[in-house]
Image: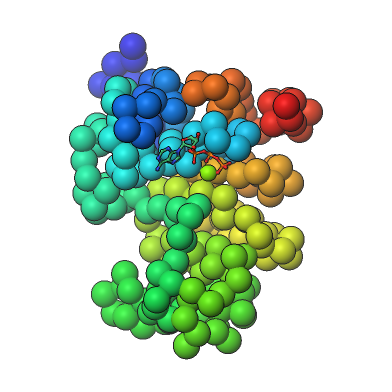
Length: 242
Ligand SMILES: Nc1ncnc2c1ncn2[C@@H]1O[C@H](COP(=O)(O)OP(=O)(O)OP(=O)(O)O)[C@@H](O)[C@H]1O
Ligand SMILES: [Mg+2]
């Protein structure tokens, strides 16, 4: 077990967000049975795995939407395992869920400005340049957007919060490639500014654009971890195919 004070003396920074042997699931049935990982400052950890292995469950455990039955979660070296989602958000975590990514009953404009104290759209102008569809649909009820458009709206809302850590659950689902490339470029800029991301992805081409580390989940545990460049597409595919 590493000693944080010694690490500090050696100049080893704590990971931005780390999780150790987390166990959790639904109604007493554990989906994840001991999953560990971490994301560093200015990096992306991509979480990969087949349908139903528990990728979304992991993000819910990290954001505090589900309790950890065992294990721990830490943010910049501080244990947050027992904190509510609202407390994790206040510390610096944001989350864009896979399901119900936007507030269907609200307009696109209100989805974007809801969490902003100033309630203005100014911060979104550079993002509208990449995703003009949102600027054109500001008054449309978000529930009437296509699946891919909802994902773009959710991504833009999450990114605009400028939190140190953003958890993204399949942001590219249903999104056309041109817009996926815009997402990758924006994530690259945010990484350069020191922000960190844990991204669940099925689209390997997108994952390869953004990942610094990979974490592959299988049968409730970690099947593979590795740095970009060390993990090949064939290895990832081998874990994704039955
Ligand atoms: N609310 C819930 N109640 C009970 N079981 C659930 C619930 N949500 C998910 N599960 C189960 O937990 C397991 C993991 O689900 P999870 O959504 O984390 O998978 P995933 O890896 O994100 O899959 P996908 O690639 O399809 O998004 C699945 O077997 C699923 O049926
Ligand atoms: Mg999922």
